[in-house]
Amino acid sequence: MKSLFAAAAVGIHLLGAGVSEAASVLYTTDFPGTATQPSGWTVVAGGTATGTGNGWRIDDNGAYRFQNPDTGVNGLSQYTGALEGGAAYNALTDYTVEAGLRRSAGAVVGLVGRMSSNDTFYHARIFTVNNLSSLQLYKFVGGSPTQLGSTVTLNPAYVADALWKLVLDFNGTTISTYAYDESNTLAGSIVVTDTAIASGAAGVRAQGTGRYENFTISVVPEPSAALLAGLGLLGAAAVRRRN
Image (cartoon, rainbow, N blue to C red; front, side, top):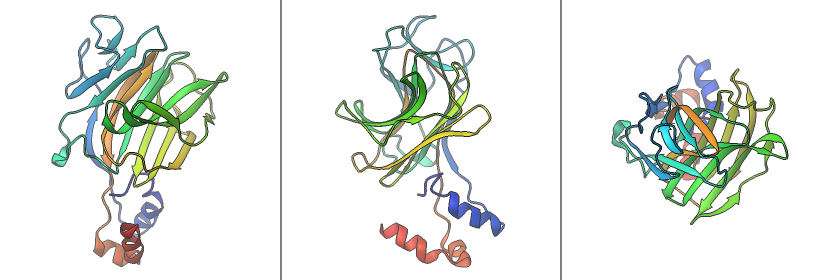
């Protein structure tokens, strides 16, 4: 599988040839319902909320919300339901997870991927560092966090409660995260190489008050051999598979 953003360069050539390789959506939701838990999701940390209490719930605006005034409490929820094509939710390797999300002032809001256990996963997050809205990428192994790459100051800056898009992408040992503002302008990105976690589930993680308007897991299939041969890219694809 070729990840969504790693496919960009090849995608340009494909479009130039009048052919496009579309992402295959394994799961997507805009969190219908209110005062409930979304179907197929499992709360790992932070608890479930009743009414307007603390924890995870779908709020009155149709967003999957985590809230807790204690910013030392992490909320973590993963998707454990069915995927298109019959893939196992906890066996995904190369894929892209993205969400439209909002965070209140001082809160942390982010995504998790390759979640192989409740305390082992990659985590991309939008956070405030030294009074600057920032993008960070972490790995947690056995609950122990390690920051991957440097903290990136978002430009433009995140404004509290704005609807942004966060993307977390896996392509072999390359782990990438991208943050887009309300105008879909790239505000920050981090790309690293790491071998700690090879596969696992996807989900969301927050502190304070974070809200998720939508959530999608997708993959981009490898172009067919015939298509690559026609574009003169078959050899390059073979090299990539060997790597």
